[in-house]
Length: 182
Image (cartoon, rainbow, N blue to C red; front, side, top):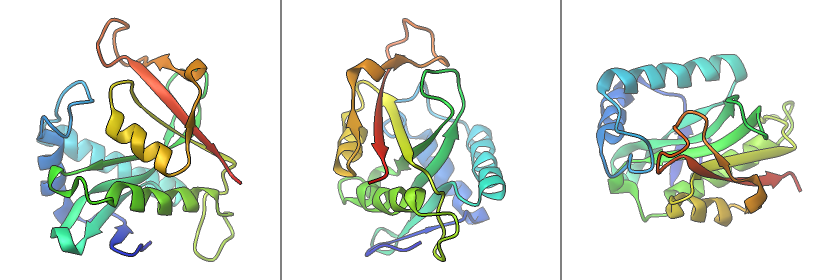
């Protein structure tokens, strides 16, 4: 997929080095329990590619020519952990710090959102969903701002403690944003 400034594509082997660098950056990972090691980052990339093979879509690698190429990912991932809203198709993003503040997350998320709602049989591809969600820790205001910019809304009654974290962990309180197909 392409947008005005971005290319959203399947992953290449050469994406793994910059992907590992962004996953190791403490500032990029400040809303996650900890940065990832190179091995963990590579395992994540393998899971991303496996999701493409299974579903035909996933967390696309994002290229921004004006930012030097690969800047991270934006896309769709199935969430199946135990929660009141799962299983659900989540829209998410993670960009390298040098790509922040340029509107890339929102621009790419609009393309991923539109893909999620297009019918599967659409010539340009689609996931045929009626609803998508996005989750993040309660303190992640930058991601919540992107969620709002792409039309998602939050009902505080949907907030939850992420089951992968201890209930008293500072990142455990999560918010859920939803968007239904128009």
